[in-house]
Image (cartoon, rainbow, N blue to C red; front, side, top):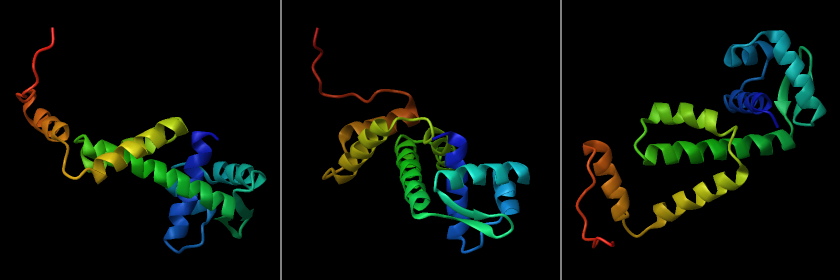
Length: 150
């Protein structure tokens, strides 16, 4: 599925979450496109059984569309969490996650999700993560007890 179609699904989902009827003009404003572009895309999404759409009646996600929206939101959350973990500012992390989520392979997302879960469930913050945070602040590798292996 194209990045554009995914963005439309996410936008419909976000507008539905606000408890409003999803109108073409609201989507056009959110996506910064013209209303005829929204109408055309809604037709394509309807053909894929992702939305229920009738002109001038508003639109809503089908169960298939809702399932896809949830997957996309989970993907976004994974990337945003990772970016924040490595020290990216929250606002930048959210914007970058929004762009990354559309171009990365599903396998990559799953591995990253498992990595985040692994780090999160560690009994204490891993020493390497503490070292990384210090490195971000100072630009210097912390001294460690590793022996030099030549």
